[in-house]
Length: 311
Ligand code: GDP
Image (cartoon, rainbow, N blue to C red; front, side):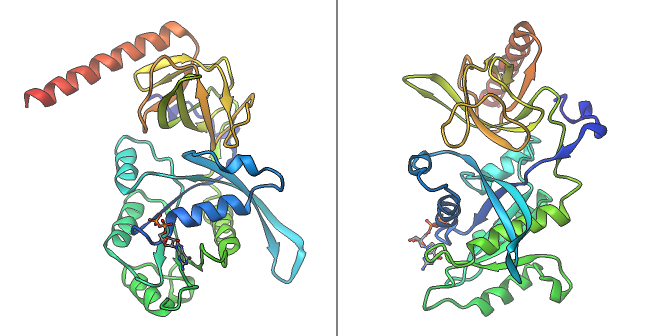
């Protein structure tokens, strides 16, 4: 699509990193995401975390280890709760590179497993930065050293071994290391990704649909990740083969908001049909333009499925 070419380098501003957690089943991806969310919920804001959403942001402060009163860095981080490795690869195949950092979770109890290796390969192929979280370090049968050796064998090397991969030991059960993991992500963003983590907030929005669904009250809902520009209610958006005017926009706490800039996940209502995960979306000037493109896309999709049927 007409995405990156319209971006003016002069107008680029820093944006938060978008992080995906990957790893073998049962190694603690969901538990880590839960723990991170809960650690970041402001006091009194209990309702905010019960929502099931595909993407959300946290704010993390990196404190001086020698003087916890000194704040060295404050970063916003966007987490994607992706349904799995396959989706990650599919997304990339369609040109939707939404992730900047992949956290590879390995349980120290099991060590490296087949899907760990698969996750590492996906992350490397997508050319995203990797951070390793060795999880379940609280478990009596955890073997951190063995797990590290297995990871080194996958060519994931920390800086004291000539590599540049950050290793963090975590327990999603006790909360140990969660802060260290957020710090590792913040440092990665600040020092290894500073050039990539930029976007122009002033242009018309574009990004990627993370999920689409219907609700009885609001009709078509879409959770989208804004990647460039700023999205506002009233904007006309084209999302895959669907289009419409953004009616209401909600942030990751379910609060209606008036604008969403780069790396912000939002839920929007107002599309005419349910879009697919991975569909690119962009704001356009005219409803008629959106309608024409949507129609052309629908025709193309129909022909593609017909071809598949005939093949
Ligand atoms: P996922 O399949 O990777 O999302 O893994 P889950 O988050 O569902 O965790 C799988 C199981 O491991 C659950 O029973 C969790 O309670 C448990 N678990 C996750 N993290 C930890 C941890 O740090 N320590 C211990 N002891 N158990 C954990």
